[in-house]
Length: 36
Image: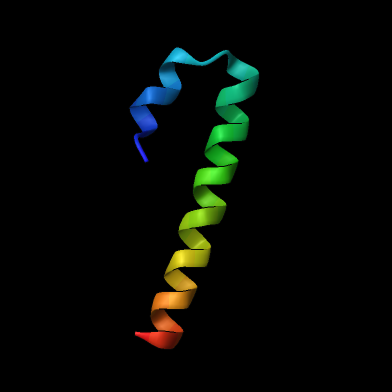
């Protein structure tokens, strides 16, 4: 995911994009930690 691409979005969508990005990152990290 390219966080810099969010700069082209309206402010309301930037917040949503960041939330989805952070949630996806946390899930990926948890899965990687548990399953290697």
